[in-house]
Length: 235
Image (cartoon, rainbow, N blue to C red; front, top):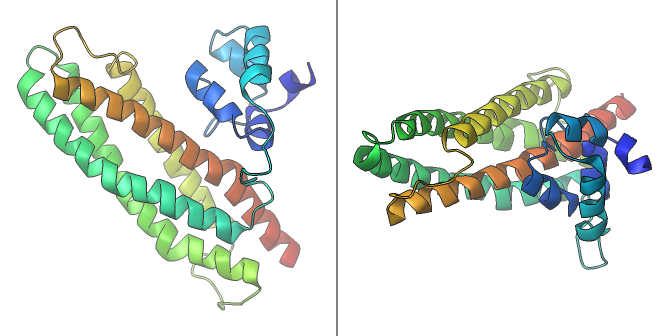
C-alpha cells in the first residue's frame, strides 16, 4: 500500500511504463500528477486495489535497454522532447485540422459535436504552435546552457521559474482542451454511421491525446522541477 500514498507523478517517474496503465484507465499523470494514487483513483471512480494490481502486472521497472529519464541529462531530455514530441505535434496537428474540417463539413449537420471538436482543436493547435516556439527558442536553450555551466548573461525573464510557470499554465490549458475533445467525442468513439475518415479522425485524436500526455509529463514532472532545482543550487 506504500504505492497508494505516492503521487501519480512519483509513480510515473519511477515506473515509466505506469503511464500506459494510467492512460488506459484515464488517470491524469501530467497536469494532475501531484495527487496521491489513492486520490486519483477516487477522482476517476476506480478501485485502488485493481489499479495497484494493474501496475504490478504491467509497469515493470526500466530494464537496462530502456532510457531512465530520471537520471538523464536535461540536454538529453530536451533533445528527446523536441525530436519526438515537438516533431509529432508539428506534423500531426495540421493533418488533424484538415481531417476535422473534412469530417465536420460532411457530418456536422447530423453530428454537431464535430463543429465543437473542430473549433477546440483549432484553438489547441494554434496554442501549441506558439508554445513549442517559445520552448525551442527561449526556454530550452537557456536550460541547456545553464546545465553546461555556460553563462548567457542576464536573461530576459529573470529566473527560470518564470517561463516554466508560463509553460505549465499553457500545459493546463492544453489539458483542458483535451478533456473537452474527449467529452465531446464520447471518448473518441465514432458513431455507427461514421465513414472511414470520421473513424480515422477519432483514432488520430486519441493518439494525439496520448502523445501530448507523455509530452507534458516529461516537462512538468521531470524537466521543469530539475531545471528549477539546478538554478536554485547554482545561485
